[in-house]
Image (tube, rainbow over all chains, first blue to last red; front, side):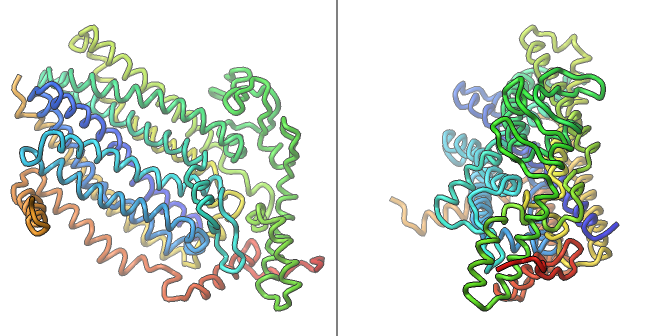
Length: 493
Length: 85
């Protein structure tokens, strides 16, 4: 394997590891905040102890997950230095906001949440618990602004002098911060965290019920966990719908790969599994019109005209325009004559949106691994629906007081905890593998974003990371399982 | 009305007492410190040196520009012969 593949695998592993901890942080934060709110409003000590137990599990997850994202930033500078320079002007602001917010909010409110019981007022403590969750959520927003820009690079212009994508004005910053892809991605990712947090609480509580321990605590925790998880599931579906429309508009190849759609058309069917289709459903999901046009892989390769009459060039034509842009950039950077420079700049600006295509060797390079994206997409939707069903049944079971008799549901809830993590991971596989070969859509493919490193050096750090990550994950699971087994012992029933 | 010094001391005592009275959280703090050590004292220092560090912004633009202008395989790709100015 070459250095590009090793660097991609290393980055994917780091991101996947980071995303093991983030969803539970985002989801559990709101579960415990709701429980503490119940304590403050009802003045019931039971809810205080319940909130404290989930805070303990939150802290374990937080402690092991903290700073895992920093490794991604190390990799940017070492493995992806060309990319880092290219986006440096743009990503500086959102990542600085994220870093400052994360540090100050977490250092302040997280500490008050854990050290402040009995030392600060109930209301201040409650506010700190909520702000810990809100801080983590805001932090996620700025990361997803950066990610969203890579999927849909809006609000910036390419500066041939600095070789960077730059924001020219405050208006440009606003465009980047409100990029529709970033907004839908934010809601999709954060609310998926609510689902993970919800099913985690329901699953752990189900284990207590199966063991006949802490029954009251478990039933009430299931109630809160199921509500948070179901609200999250609803929001995930709505934001997923928006993501589908955005993929159709800005990354049609990703959508075509996720559907395994070779030849598109009007009134396109949605494939549940190969051979089982829902007529017109893909057109509805992608365009909100049952007869809307959805391009397939071949349409994108060969060029097509969309429903609004816009002619989308073939990939071969885009490659020609991309090479014209790169030639113009070369002339611009080497020419001394102002007239030649001005003409080169004009030609560059005319073709810059296809600049990245100039680096492709053949049109088929724009097709991501279809099988991986196709099956990851189905796994994400299928498992997401299964978890939503288990959450709904858990809520019904609480309402009808059937938790004690529906043992199968308790087992299903426990099984759904690891499945929630699988769902989170395959969701990111759809998003990130689906946009290959681009680090920045249309502008910078992975083979140019990469640093000049040897594959051996990347391999060494890959296996080093794998060992460290596995060790930390094993430690977390051990501490977490120990805390769960111990249970909320201080709660008297 | 508390002075700035009193407020600062109160915050200091809050954190100090919090850490002192930790029970189950103590191993987690050690875990975080161990992780920071591995990240910043080992990985960052020995394995993850930024490739473009030590260069001026102009030099970075030149290095990245040369790679972007180069062809798909990274080899030099001179401006097309048909390029008309």
